[in-house]
Each structure stands twice: as C-alpha cells, then as structure tokens.
Image 1 (cartoon, rainbow, N blue to C red):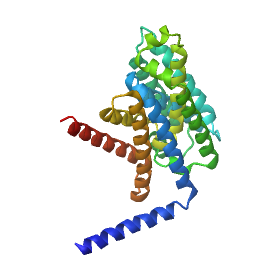
Image 2 (image 1 turned 30 degrees about the vertical axis):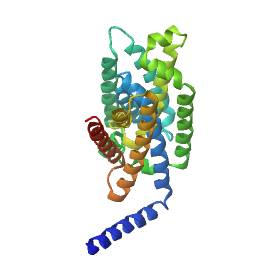
Image 3 (image 1 turned 90 degrees about the vertical axis):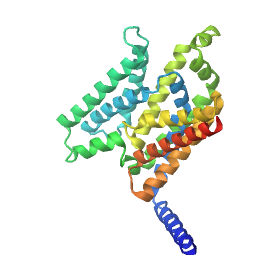
Image 4 (image 1 turned 135 degrees about the vertical axis):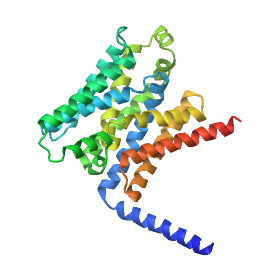
Length: 292
C-alpha cells in the first residue's frame, strides 16, 4: 500500500513538473487564455440556441467559416480573420433571413448553407492550394489539431477584445435575450424589437464561431455550444441557473481539456470535446440519482 502511495505521489509530482515546464512557453499560456474565453462565450449563448431549437446554427456557420478560410489561404492573406469574420457574419444574417422564409425552414437552410460551404471550401483548397501538405491543412482546419498552439500575441488580444464585447452584450441584453428565447410573441407585444435581437444573437454567434475555429476546428464547434447547455439543463431548471452552470462547466472542461492534451499529447480540440461529453454523462447520472 505504501509503495503504491509513493508511486502515485511520484506520478503526480511528475505531471506537475511537466505542466510547470510547459507553462514557461507563451503559446501554452495563450492557448489556455483563448480556450477559456471561447468556452465562456460559447456557453452563454448556447443555452439560448438550444432552447430555440437552433443549436445547429453553429455547424452551418462553422462550415461557412471553413470555406472562407480556404479562400483566405489560397489568396495568401496574412490575417485570415479579415475575410473569415465578415463572410461568417454575413452568412449568419442570410441564414436568419432564409430560416424565416416559409418555403425554406430553419433546419433546411442550415443544412443547405453548411454542406454547400464545406464542399466549396474543400474544392477551392484542392484546385488552388499550393501547400505540400493539403491533407494536414484540411485536418487542422476541421479539427483544430494544432492551430490553438500557434497563436500569436496579436490574435490573443483580438480574441480577448471580442470575448469582452460578447460578454458585455449578453449582460446588457440579458432580459431581452431571455424574453426572445422563451416567447417571441410576448416580447414583440411589450415593444421589443425581436428581429433586431435575433439578428444580434446571430452576429454574436458568428463571432464566437470564428474565434472557436482555432480551438476545436469547424467540425467540433457545435460541441462547445451544445454540451455545456445540455449538461446544465440536467441539473437546473431556471434560465439564470442553467446559464451560470453552463458557463462554469464550459470553462472548467476547456481548461481541463487543454491540460490533459498537454500531458497526454492528444489533439486539443477533440480532448476538450471528450471532456465535455464526459461532463454531460456525469450530469445525467447526478440528475438520475437526485430524481430517484
């Protein structure tokens, strides 16, 4: 027993020493800062998207961002966000308008834009790309395998500023977001401009999607939006409690996922999503025990 205890202590001390060594590098600190901020922003509006049954808007916009990023890489733009962000925001507006069309429902509009943008982006990268490692570039963009560890100080500051704007927007517009989430007709009756708030929510989601591309890649972004919200809904039932719990869970899972990926040498994005999925399973078990 004592031998096992000593061995366990050695393992823990070795992990702490390894983390201390990695934290000396700026790119690791940058990854933690950006990861936590993106997780926080995703969770705040994730509850609204899940309750409005529009959670897969993240998928659609992430694939649009992939297409825009493919064009930016072919054009050799030094700052891809200058193209990716405006295109994704414009697509969010278009998606909202198309989803309100009686002939094209919201889920069909998302599927149409999502598949079209993904195919167009991959086609562009194949036809015009001059990279010697096309498969690696595509994999990195889709799954965020290495891009989070290559962030520059400038990109981190951009992420911090945009994240602060998202949090301020959510705090200032909390009551109206709550009203729009649960009853658009009531919100419209009391004088709220429902269309404007829906539009702002779509634009903010587009900003979050662009930020999250570097963290988990375009195929895994929806996990950051959906998992924390669904996990929180298993434990709480009020909008405020679910939102707070979702934010705490999302930040904790992102932080733990990045730490585990450093220690185990696994891809950052998929590790974070795996931790989110594990947290969802734990919340489901906890809810089942409490409700017995």
